[in-house]
Image (tube, rainbow, N blue to C red; front, side, top):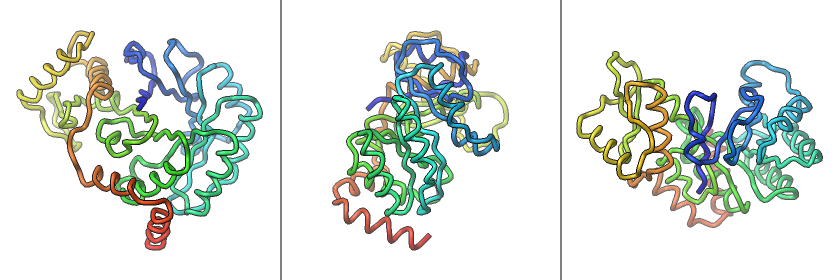
Length: 288
């Protein structure tokens, strides 16, 4: 499974880790590394900020960036709702420009999931699954897992947007690739990732978010992990950029060893046939 690290700027040099990268076309005008790179359209941010949708302008930016693949200009839908037909038009536009564009499928109603799969698989064997991050995940994790496996059984290759943490990779265990940018967000918040345990606060300020203060044993465990895995940089947990780089290393070098209910459920759904999964999704949509 490939793990793409999201890059916001040049302050945290994760490209030196030789891992695939994901960038947002809204934030970049050129690429400064040789790593495999995918470019996100910024569709969610465009909608949040009220920026007019302009597929031609995004096409120009994509061509300037000259990356390996590009995420379609996607208009998300709420769970169990219909797909926005503009997504198909945007995909066709990029495809006709001979760009390696990756379509996004959200947790639509099952008829529209089928419609999206039928449409996109005419052109590509790769799709991205969107909408797994909060609030969708918090509001209906089971629904997300069933929808993911339904799409997974219908396509050759799947990328799960926002599911790059070791825990999420264990849930979406049969995905081909995932991505995450939380390593940097957590680092800026004074958090480090402890392999096998999750995030811990290492700062001295009073914190208002839900995070436990790191213990000496946990820090010792982290330092030992970094040594064993040959972490190539100076360790400085007092510096946010250094914390972010440590977090990125832990993300790509560690695995989640637990067996949470989410992990167990995902494997149970994987063993179901596609028709039964579809029926379960339809039932959950009726209950929303």
